[in-house]
Each structure stands twice: as structure tokens, then as C-alpha cells.
Length: 153
Image (cartoon, rainbow, N blue to C red):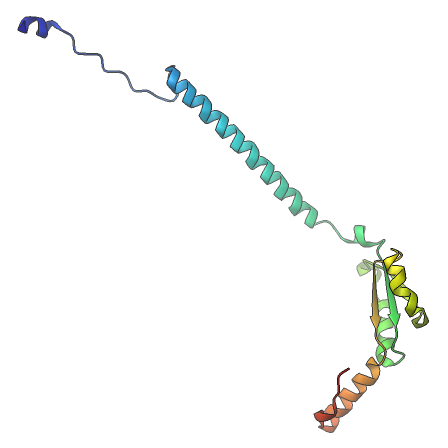
């Protein structure tokens, strides 16, 4: 009996199982891992593409896209501040002109909002009436040292 046990071979120790072995269990694990990895990479590439598109789209020169945006410029103040206001828009250099300024007469005030609502203009920039008088009052009160006379409308 002892001799029979000595003649027996020890059970074979299985070799190490590695990722590229042909064991069916490892093949299934490898296939699942590679499918998961490919799906993850595709989603990540799509995310990178979307971020790149947003980045590239944000760097586009706005002059190409805003040249057709009409903006009404109206001076309701007939004083010094109003004239400086209009001169600032008239003297805008051509290189930085990104909007199409349309100068409106102050008598057209009732139709400006209506024209914007109808899509004839994108916006309106205006100087309200009485700004020159308010600025004159503020400057005179500062020069006279009497700031209690300043009133705001």
C-alpha cells in the first residue's frame, strides 16, 4: 500500500492563466473587457469631439455673423451729452464696427419698439431725454461743493 502511494504521481498543477490563454472562461472575460473598453473609448471620443466643436465655435470671428444685425441709435436728449453720444457711434472705426447702426430721429420714438418687435432691428441704443441737464446739475453741485442739491430721476 505504501509502495502504491509512492508510485502515484502528484496531481498536475495547472499553469498560470493569463489574459491571452485559450481557456473558455478567460476568452469570455477578455471579450467582455474588450467590448466594454471599445464602447468606453467611443463615448470618450464623442465627448472630445463635442468639446472641440464648442471650443472651435466659440473662437469664430463675430464680425462675420453680426454684420447684418441692425441696431437703432436714437438721441432723445438734444443737449451736449446727446451729441457726444451720436458722435461716438458715427466715429466708430470700420475695423471694429460689428453691428449695423441705423440712426433714428427722436420723433420716431413711438415706432422704435414696434419695429424691433416686427424684426426690422435687433436692438435699440438710446440716450434718454434730460441726461445733459442731469449731468450739468451734478457737475455744478460738485463745483459749488453743495451735493445736497443732486436729485435723481
